[in-house]
Image (tube, rainbow, N blue to C red; front, side, top):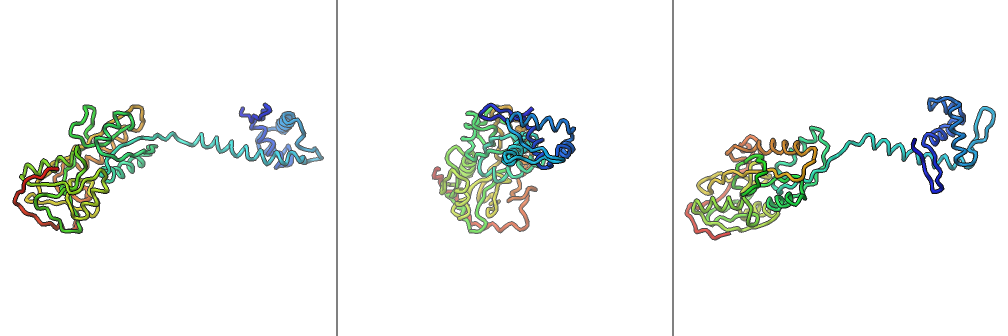
Length: 327
């Protein structure tokens, strides 16, 4: 039976406190017994046990009623606090389901494009998961998984580990500003992540294979820096289908810019023992694979087509090749 233990080694059972509060409020042993569903004799015994534990009387017995002593009035106020805290503790321990925290790593553009639907799907399935989301470059996320700093990472890698699980291969598209006239004549001005980024390599490889010059006009480790450069009209970049934000559009003209192919997206799993990791991986696969295998340029639509309201893509293009200028 739960007890309250004080500095003087006094032990008071919770049921005795609850009985005392009921007697105090009812002013009668019989009424308190009815309220707690016990006999009057049992209620009288509980009161005696509590008074013995406290070594002082709590009520003055009068005809058909009990009058609380001054000590009882003070003790009643404190007993209410103790019982409220105890009831809250018990209620929380019984009703609180186990919530699992998953450490997930994902590049910024994938997080913006894919994670909202993934999280919504898991919440719809009533999976009790809290997310610790880290956005970084794919190479850094892969290293974090190796160090057990992440439970799962979503990454696009040139040389994925053997344990990597392919989630999908969305098409890569050239993307530019929807609001400004873009100059995509050689040397092509690129916005790119630092060396080692698969998208950066895909752009450079495609341009050099087509004999087109290029330069990295804007380089950033952060997605916001890339987006700012593109929206300014100063450069173009490569993005995977399903991750192209509002205000940017696909440049779908093979005479200006060569096709980029597809971007393999992998799941890298870290430590085991996460109960919902399979559900998370399945949700990621479902969302990402929905954008895979379709070579039709798309802005934010899921059906692989540009929406009717898509802004007109305005650009100037020269078809004469210029020598590559390096990264």
